[in-house]
Amino acid sequence: MKLFITCILLLFSFHARTPVANVYICDSKGSKAYHSSKTCRGIKICKHQVLEVTLKEATDVYKRIACKICY
Image 1: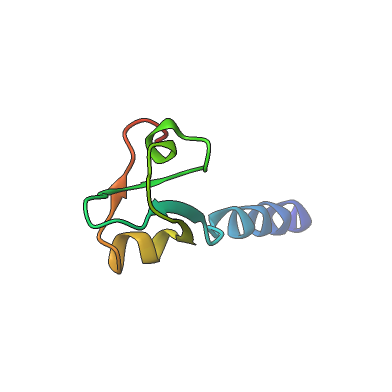
Image 2: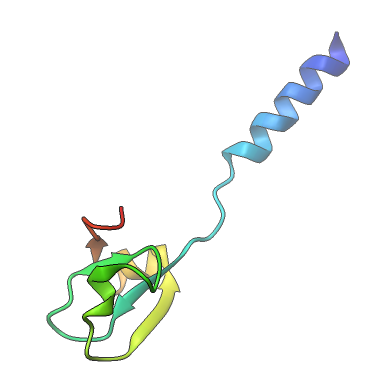
């Protein structure tokens, strides 16, 4: 029984960690969203450079919100 409980606790501890997610943003002043992939139709209209950044950077540094199309 102890082994079972230990396994369950380990499973939940690994599941609780969230990996660092990379998102895509358009490097223009008018851009307001971050996207889950480069194939999102919201980012395809970007006329500037598309940057791959972490989710934390997108929200904290670039002040972007989630795209309503791909999220």
